[in-house]
Image (cartoon, rainbow, N blue to C red; front, side, top):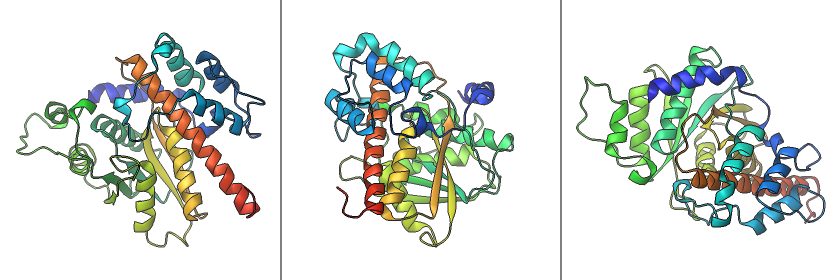
Length: 315
């Protein structure tokens, strides 16, 4: 598994992109991009009035792209009436909207790197992506890493069985105990896969009240509280994620920073391409639509916050 991930990274690095992934959804005038309009057409979603941010958000809400609160990604289901459109949804999202392509760092100087908690397979992909960035000289090897995690029990349904975990252990080594929760699993993966001279700090996030676990929102909030001089010093952090979640995580991090009042801190989410075979295409299509729905919701909320900062009496 590890060799395949490393080879895949080097194959796609030439076609990865640095542009703000959020611009694949809307242009600078907040009008839906041609690619997003194509996805709306494929899924039969009608926008009333001009296809601007607010109207697209209303249309997507009505179409119920977003899964119910508390649903984990591996539990999401595509509406039965869209099953025959799964391949087309995936193609538009991966290729046209760029949700299947790698995004690489676009700056030389970062204050540090953040690793967001995830299921085992995603964590392994993110560590390998980071190591490849190091080998290509795209980031400073002395960059400190903050690992943001939460108290989530591991799930065999999410590919976190004991057999899956054992895949990263060298054959000559034996482990008496395996991790049973996300924090232990992250330490386990970093122990076996990350170079020993990298400076690491773990930040434990609390559960989101609307979910069964910590989320990107609560993770970033916990990190900001743990960061020395977070309210005064200027920082730009590299955030290691993976596709197809980069646009969502970029949007939610910008929203948290705006809500909590950190104009001095910026983030840049990057991550590897989708390079594994998709066995359950309707389920994957559901994840893609949910990701876009949540991103659009965040953009609407961010727009409202920006308007309030200009005019406190704006509704």
